[in-house]
Image (tube, rainbow, N blue to C red):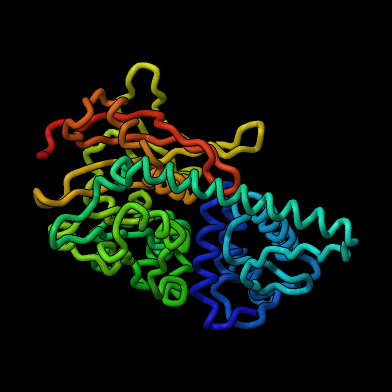
Length: 409
C-alpha cells in the first residue's frame, strides 16, 4: 500500500512507464495504473471496478472478473517494461500477488554470489591477473585523459551555451506532472495555460475529462522534474563550469530569465511547455497523433530523400531506434542563446542530451551545413537519430539538418 511520502517517487515512476512503447496503446491499462498510483489505502476489487471500469456500486465481483483480468495484464506489462525500456529506472513499481495496491521500491542491482575460496596457486594467478588489469586500467585512463585533453569542450554542442560575463546556463527539465495530465486527459497544455495554472483547476479538469476532476488535487498537486535530468548533469559539468549552471523546474522559470541567461530546454513542447516559446516557426515539429495518443516528429517541408515524419520504432534486433529534435536558436535578447533538445519520448530526449557532450559534434554540424572552420555558426534545427539498448544510446547521427535564415545573429 502506498504511503503519502512515496507519492512523488510514484508519480515520477508512473510517468516514465506511461511514456514507454509498452504502454503507448494500452488505454485501459493506462487508466488503471494511473488510478492505482494515487491511492494510499488498501483497495478492494469492487472499488476499482466502479472507479475505473464504470461498474455499478456494489456489483458482484464473482460474476465479473474485469478487475482481476486487467490487474493480471498490468503485472505482465510492468514486467515487460522493466525488462526493456525501464531496465535502468531507479524505482520499481509492482502489484504484489493477492493485492490490488501498487508497491514502489528502489531498484538495487542483484549482487553476485561470493566465489569459493581459491587455492594458493589460484591466488597467485588471480593476483597476477589483477595486477595486469590494474595496469591496463591505468593505461586506458591515461589514454582517455590524453584524448579528453586533445578534444576540448569547445568541440561539443553544449559549448554553444557557454555563459558570458554575468550570465548563467539555465537547464530547464521536463515536468512529469504536466506529462501525466496530458496523458490522462489527452489535452495538450499551452504555455499560457501552464503559466496561469488554470488547467489544473478541478472544474476545468472535469470539463475535459469527466470523472477526473475529483482526483485532480491529488494527481497534479506538485511539479516533479524527471530524474534522468539529474543523471545528465555530470557530463554537462565537463563542458560548462558547475558554478555557471542552474538546474530549475519549468514551473519556477520566469520569462525574464530568457532575457538574461542562456538556456537548455530539455524535452519537447508537451513535456516542457517553455519550448513553445521558441519552436512555433520551426520546420521540425513534435506533434501527437490524437487517435493513437502517440507523439512523433513532423517534417513540414521534406527535402528530397527525407521522410515526412519520424517515428520511434523497434527493429528486428530488438534495438530501439528513436528520433529527437535539436535546435540552436537566439534567445529573447541579442546576448542570449537557446538549445532545444528533446524528442517525443523519454528515451529519445535522454539520447539527444548525451549527444550534446560528445566530442567533435560541433564539427559535424559545420560539415553538414558547409560552414568553414572558424566561421560563425548559424542558427540551425536538426533531427537526431539514436539507436539504444534499454535507454543507453550507442549510436547517434543527424537524420536531417537545416540552417535557419532570417533570425538575428
